[in-house]
Length: 311
Image 1 (cartoon, rainbow, N blue to C red):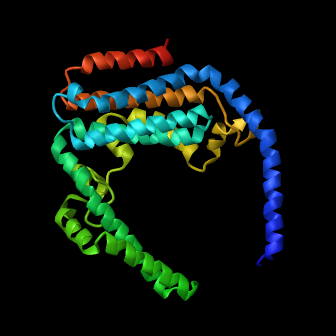
Image 2 (cartoon, rainbow, N blue to C red; image 1 turned 90 degrees about the horizontal axis):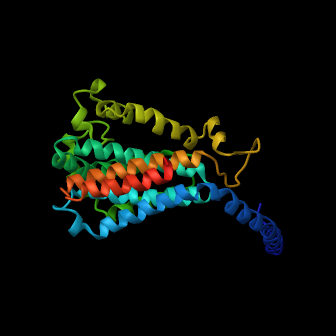
Image 3 (cartoon, helix red, strand yellow; image 1 turned 135 degrees about the horizontal axis):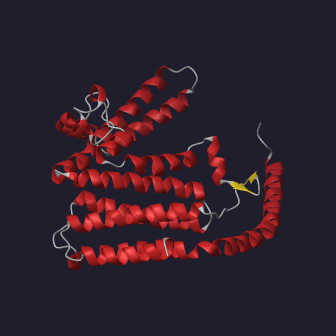
């Protein structure tokens, strides 16, 4: 039912007034809560900030730190986890534990990919990773095609809705060149699953997975000797990230589930685990770039980590 314009304006004004009144009550209280409950964890949060800033220092000092240019994929991972660490810092600074857990999982995945990339045949594996973008675009294009096909035969949608979706698809793939996507995929498709090209590392493990399936993260972790880390970090964080009952553990204050920021020992856990994996990625990147400063940088980063999370 359409709301008359006069009623609409009154409704908007009413809820604006309600919001402003509530803000005047809630915001000062939230600020006091943040300042008070954040204080016990400032040492750990400051350590995350220092590691993040140090990563940026390394990025800006590559010519003096790296003996040779680091592998492009490793450099990409290095920069990605720097951004992840900054994001985790912001989440934990404001008591957003579930969001921080999600980013923690992302850091772990990048750590696993970095280990896999540097295990052996780095340049070949880097090519598999880089060229997987063509398979990903091909997958996305086909998903849109299936969607458009389903729209065309649907009796539940208006013609305007169908037309709008088809026009969006045509515009999108005109801009990125559908023919080029297909040609690129044809050129590289032998390196990815023949029916479900959903993982860049399929070729590496195709003879070890059941029915030549795509490798799963837990499978890769087992192959790399990281399965204990997978169980302790990735699986645990997943309990908070996915919509499962156990995520209430990250949202409970004084026995009640709340959206109010929460500060607890979980902050130390997320911060220390994330920092440790990021430090490992930094050191692996330095070794890949044949840096002569690996040991001294390792000493410095371990000093930051121990000062915040161990001492």
